[in-house]
Length: 181
Image (tube, rainbow, N blue to C red; front, side, top):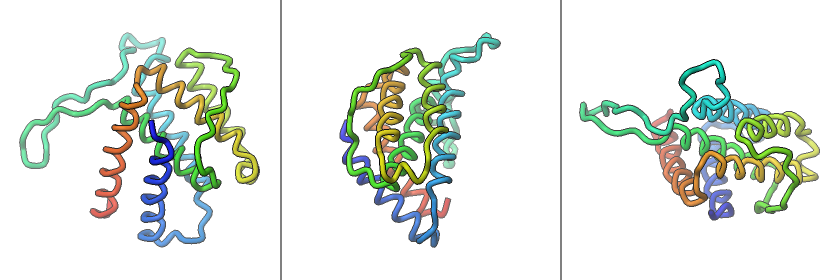
């Protein structure tokens, strides 16, 4: 997976959004952090494995058949992967915002490798981020990125699947900007 290329692609998208929406000079980091947490919750919801009260704990990996705008049926994608990649978009945006030039794949001691534990750990780590300190010390960011990549593996995604899905979603996000969504 070429994270460096994805950082660069995300910066282009973020710069476009900031320019087109007139957001120059605004502190968008709090929005990005909250958006990451929301998308992470949506990813957990698509995974469903924590729902011990439900008889339906199978991950949502296929959309049902959908009707396209022209009236034809189309097969949807993988909702779990889509939500995971949405998280990646915001994680890359945060990295760009705090000045991360590249991901430093530092191996960290992990307290858990089960999926629920990884989700909980990532939420906790993000909640402990000190916005100002993130600009000075990128280790807390790298730790979240490391755990997030471990989560992707635990969910069964290959690095190539993640990169391909990211590239496809980046195109969609540019189209949305073009269309005013």
